[in-house]
Length: 218
Ligand code: ZN
Image (cartoon, rainbow, N blue to C red; front, side, top):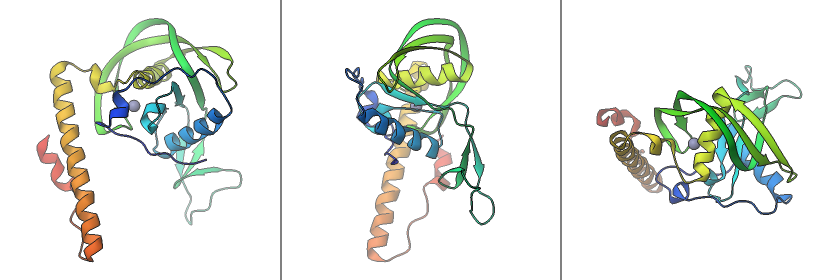
């Protein structure tokens, strides 16, 4: 397994529509494994292909797992799955290829965040219950009924496949505010990284983190 790079707003791949997967071959086992590792490591409860730079209709979700800190000394019990500095427990990974909602019911509001929209959350309204059709990693058609957090998560990930972020679902004023703020923070982060590299190359102390002054702009 390998951890993949997570693209963040305003990277263009997040605004593009992913294409249906015509033939589910064995290479998708590897991709799904890598996407799950990336998701657990983040940690996140869902990840869409767009977020790792691929325009293919595949998402991974797990709304059940828990992360437990490694015990003192960093040694995990035998058989435990370790991701980063934590033990992964109770996982229930799902891989959904070409997912399509075939039924939906009710509405639910939830404070959403996104691995591709760092440090920003907002309340989003979605269908409360959904039923979907998708293909599994063996290319077999399946149906899944979901409600609550799993339904929210799947709808959020399916939006990614259509080139949509949760901030695109906000009112025009809120969306505009969010996008400006996120772009500014990304520039700050990139500038900080550039200065840090420069300092490293010149052997001088690195600049202080932009995190400290960021609060002001909100
Ligand atoms: Zn997301």
